[in-house]
Image (cartoon, rainbow, N blue to C red; front, side, top):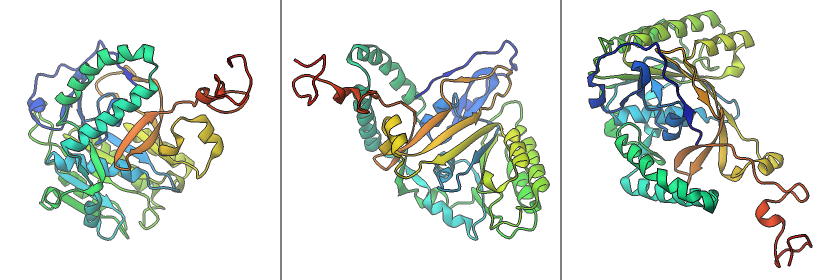
Length: 363
């Protein structure tokens, strides 16, 4: 996983110590920034801690596959597990029915099994002469994970979330299908965010907003470009003064290029997902573990709140994998070792007595 290089700005907001560390689901970051989890541990690492509190996250959908739903489901489940109020807006007729598809947190047994398998995979990938350096730092990484156990969960995509997490009154669902305008959704968002005012860094509770496919064809909003842009601008302004995070997914292919750029500019965190073409043999030769990939995640923009120092990523494109078809994993793209003469990997390109070709290494 690519690590982020974060530099501390010399100009930082002086915020006193708050009770946020006692509230599950909130983590303190540099320059007085507080983070909430995306519901995906790997994505939290990529973004330098998670989604900043008060930020607007936008995800560009892929028209060929609903991979954005993987990110949206984990984000919603993470908040419900931590007892955080949720506002969910969808173009579906019955948005509450979508809650039954949210993933469930994995058990401790599943976590140990996944951790063991991950260690085996890393052991196979890392050359033996570097393995001793990896083992020295592994204990520190494990201690860091244990301390943040309540911050982010691993979710089992094959197990539905238990009903008691979303059956209460802390979940508000809104249908934007056949909606003549965005006034109703704007009022619901304003009422929801009014519950979480930001008062001198006090954290009694925080909320999450998830808006799916804002300009979907089944909504009557496709021709309201300026109205949708005004709604996004207003929502971003309300988030700045509230202890909440909002995610908006949208099909960028349905927007004009100019308005798509405007939407991207309004986002604090901008992500996009893309499906992998079926049986792309050329791509399969270039990437390691291609057969396990289901898509790609691109990081276009990262929120930098309370600072002017940019965050530098070692990579901006990551592969989306389903570990054991259960856990969502993000990994850096690794180029497969290729032998220019044969197109096979280094492990099978040339050899000793078992090689079918003669070469300098045969004996």
